[in-house]
Image 1 (tube, rainbow, N blue to C red):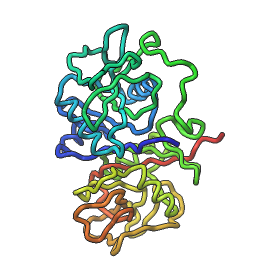
Image 2 (cartoon, rainbow, N blue to C red):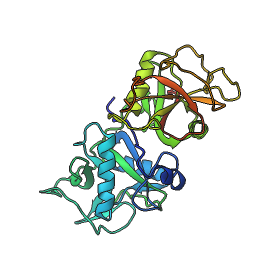
Image 3 (cartoon, rainbow, N blue to C red):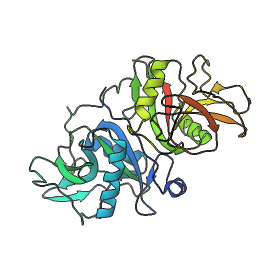
Image 4 (cartoon, one colour):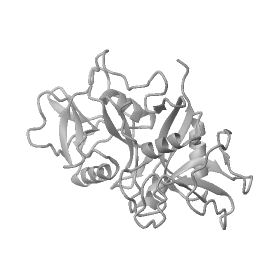
Length: 317
């Protein structure tokens, strides 16, 4: 399956982002701007439909500060920073506009753009610049959430009936990732404490991911990692293991057997914090002398961590 793991980093305004934006999104340069990054590739029309599910639109960009913020964030979370990421700009007749209905008062086209064949806008993180691409091009995308939803009509953005559908749609919803070794679906979300993360997963009929062998541990690492060395121990992810309500006895939130562990040296220590929940290190930590990469640690359940993966059974064929 072709996908880029959806990952959001925590920036310096982490505390503000938690307070101002929904779980899974990141605060932008304005206090009322929240952005959600999707690494699962899809076409322009389906990307807009997904944004509308989060009460938003594909993001509009009205100044150089927002453009730089988006490019800088994407540079941090994408392995291939020359990949194109869909924004909300599209061509309506001979003019360009945004999916939220706002006017295009700012542009940052690359040299030779917009080309005659492209009819929607994608940003290339490595140079901050925009490119006109085909509506049918499957790409990652950015939603701006919390604003008014303004659906694109078929007269504005027509997607041919033979447009390729996101891979594995028979197994999972289009924005979930299918893991064929165990026939489960996974989706990455961001910025939550353990309890809030579990509650969010349950709204999707899922739980924070349990892990039952080293291959699944590697898979969870792969879909949640930033691809860089991180500088902070909160730049990690929750997994579904905790001793909440059953002190000193770890259990998976989905009720599956506790049949595999991957603890880092000296853990679990289960000290000082009361209830303990378990984190996984999907990236190397710069200051980490013990090399916790891909290993587990028990932590304070109330701490906000960068990400978590929800897990649920795949659909039956």
